[in-house]
Image (cartoon, rainbow, N blue to C red):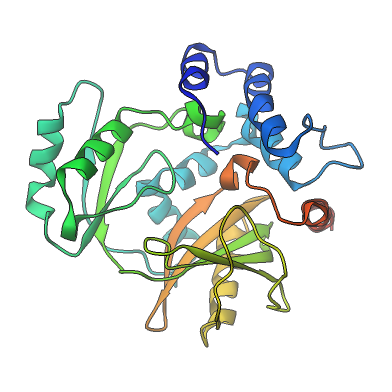
Length: 295
């Protein structure tokens, strides 16, 4: 889902307050789910109500959350929580404050163009630029992203205070993403994204059974064939350890040649606006989150 140009404009001029955030997000929520958000204490509330509620509240976040959201400090946070996890090697962190020009960014990136590296804005989510085949349209896209506060898209308040930087780190290539939905150190659901930058496919698996679920999350189809890596239990153990300090988080990992790499912490996956193909699963997932947090 994308916000319209007018929705972006209104979001930019609206203060960051819970009631205003909820009001702005409600338009997207109704468009996606055909109803208004429910209070999380409502017996019929589901996972999507839960995510939207927490992302619109500034008080949801402690300092450790904000360190875990910033792509630069997230790597330090992950290593501090779980020393056994690897992180892609950082080449440089480029400061991109307001007022810089695209020529400034081009000059900063120049030493890395053509190398097996990626560039990631540290203050948002999901944007990866492969520098081995980096071109001018991608430069423009990255520059525009450095000028944008991700908060204004769907009022995810954890992004509001972040400063703009570009992280240059080693590229792991076209590896699978293993994304563990966790509540206080307990992995509940596994999302695996395959060929994300070529022909994106996605499969969901129940935990701890690792059984593939007959449902989709978002618009992505399931892969025709799929097999988990031999060290999947090790990935799950690392996700559990990394998620222990947080009430709810999606821990995103990579696996390459038997080595587990940290990718990112995601506290409000898809801004709570990616639907399950079976709506009843959303309520079931929220029930498991609540049971885990209350145990």
